[in-house]
Image (cartoon, rainbow, N blue to C red; front, side, top):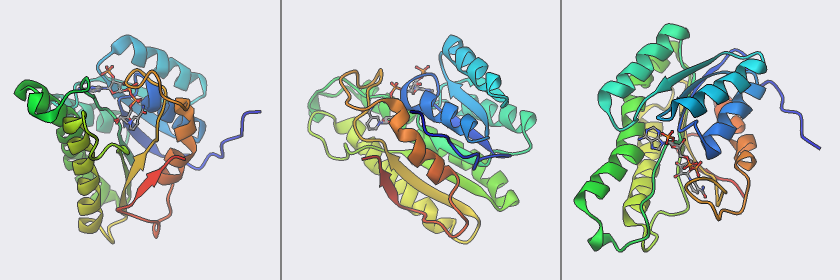
Length: 230
Ligand SMILES: NC(=O)c1ccc[n+]([C@@H]2O[C@H](COP(=O)([O-])OP(=O)(O)OC[C@H]3O[C@@H](n4cnc5c(N)ncnc54)[C@H](OP(=O)(O)O)[C@@H]3O)[C@@H](O)[C@H]2O)c1
């Protein structure tokens, strides 16, 4: 039987990157179930359009913005469109990411290394950089960076480095923003079945309860921590 989600995000606006599939799709739907309006970001328009329809059918607003999170001007457009459509963004979920085929790190091409770091690390930095000032004005923000158990995994050097660095970014920003009303945490989803990980063990919606918990933390809640879906 499906558990009923309490509407703990009523009145909130959440921006979810990588919403076109897998964990991002599940979190965006879950946030809408919990009462939030949602800004959906990814590159595949047709998939975001389907998700937006599903969210609107729940009576919530959904704005879709097609963008590559590695590209600064695209991220600026995301934030411009989001802040035109909604009074503010309360919740930022940096979920979009890529992985490379298994390979030793010294055999990774420079192009692949740079691209992966740009998507997995520069993207979250760019979005945080553009959204934190408005969160500071509002005195409220919840940032969730989707990390991974892979932080030093042989064969996945670039990905591991990106996720270890994203966790470092989480801890640094949490300390810098202490006392401002903005909480910054990391969410490690565990091994989930998705396009990135077709053999994964769990369904993407197993991540939703923890994502909602982190998105609705009280002002004195934890910040700078990594939470793992078991
Ligand atoms: N699955 C797992 O077992 C697992 C384990 C640990 C951590 N994670 C993390 O969980 C998060 C979600 O992964 P997933 O498993 O749900 O994989 P997924 O189904 O492959 O989803 C990745 C999402 O990121 C988007 N994306 C990729 N590159 C992008 C870019 N340059 N700009 C904008 N969006 C981009 C993709 O959409 P478009 O192609 O439409 O842009 C897609 O929606 C990732 O951060 C991943 O590292 C997953």
